[in-house]
Image (tube, rainbow, N blue to C red; front, side):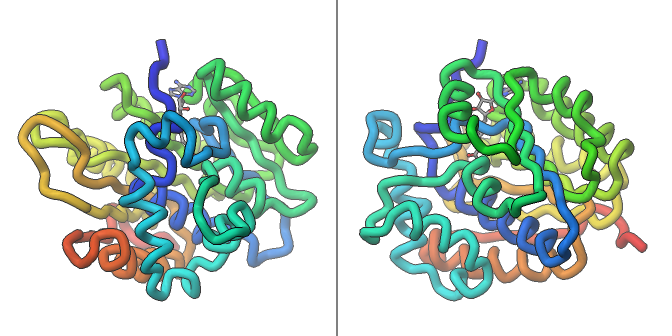
Length: 284
Ligand code: SAM
């Protein structure tokens, strides 16, 4: 039974990190004229109102996108696509609407590119269908993400990326996500794969476990980009998050380094820390 609803967390600092990296990867892939496929395995509904009951209950966007837009530093020059998408959704300057990963991906698709979005929660899937169901470039799958990725990969157009963004409601997601990426990469080694993970309180944190599983895949050019935004408590809360980028395209790692150092200042007000580290050998 799925109970996680992304509307409670949309636009928080984890979303900001993940979506900046997503834009950096897709903008690199778009540099070539050739079509690409983007697969989003845990899509969510795709667009979120920050003034609805869910978002207002937690107020998480205040420490994420709201804070970032107040003090964006050099980020709009480094990842302009992200800021353009948010500005277009919020023309009066105040951020009331936040784009989920499917919306960001849709905005970056060209005529011959393809988006494949997977989501299992009935209400999230209805929202996804409402938001993207009429776009001929996008196909929607209401199915389990891991089983779905196994079935979909390799897609007809093998160039592109996978975003895997589990809710980690179930402990098995940590191991399943990495092994699912491993299987997908073996079938489609031309794709870049991104896996988001949380850094939780000391008792519940599984980030070291997921990083060691990721290392064991030995996929060339695997990087981990992580940011901590608060002290790690003993038993409660999330103090940061990261994205593992498998088969990271050449030069995108440098762009991610710039993103992290700017984010440390803008959303951490100088109190956060970040790390970018290589988890595997350089590819050829
Ligand atoms: N990627 C989205 C974004 O950045 O806007 C947010 C996704 S949210 C963190 C995770 C989503 O995965 C939720 O909408 C949840 O319903 C969905 N989900 C969780 N387990 C799933 C599974 N086994 N198969 C498909 N979807 C799943």
